[in-house]
Length: 292
Image (tube, rainbow, N blue to C red; front, side, top):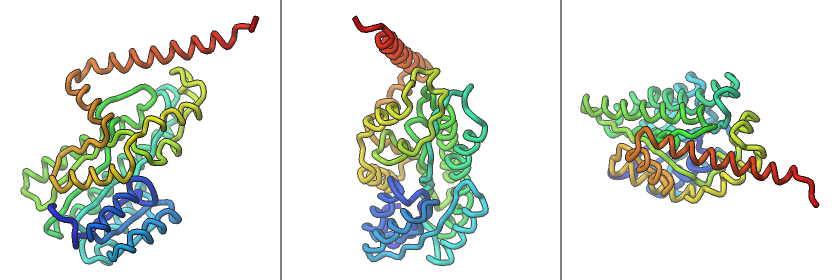
């Protein structure tokens, strides 16, 4: 897809962050939009901002973990716009916990949005993308779809799944010479509210995370890439028909580490985690000593 002008793009998770900036970047390129989210207030603001670019914008509240809602939305998009050329399966949530501590309800929640949301979005829109004669599926994985880290087992599981699903999809589309392609996006630390809204389980204390909110704030400080820059990188990747788009230097660095040390990169991660545990233990010991 060399140009977005005159095309129709559907975007999930469009009420804020990367979903909103993707919508605005596409609108500036003359792309018509169908946006969705569960946050209706934020979604309305995105639609209002995008419409100022003179493109047609429709919006709908959609829970991507509900298959029937995603399929109904896909039908609405084609009815309202006449076709659909792109689906950005961008909606996602975060959850931190140990495997022993994770509750099944939380595991099912994150899988429902991060993985099944991508599956439903892909399968619901794919026939419409084929019918358009020029289509593209853009699925958001993560830096944590490339490497695993302690405390992120559920998030890792969903994002690795998105990666495998999308890579297989791309291969099938090429084997069948379909008029549709697929790109898997791996953002690193993007300045959005995903960390702020992430669920954090008390079981993280077993990994040395004693203050969950302080840890959240510290994690957010590592986010360097703006959502606006991330959107431009992603759209450039779609224009190049890239199989994989890495967003941010952290994603690039850890992708290189995983390629260099495909299995033993885990030792590097474990060593870093143990150093962190040691520092936490030392601080706790120092704080427990009576002052002279």
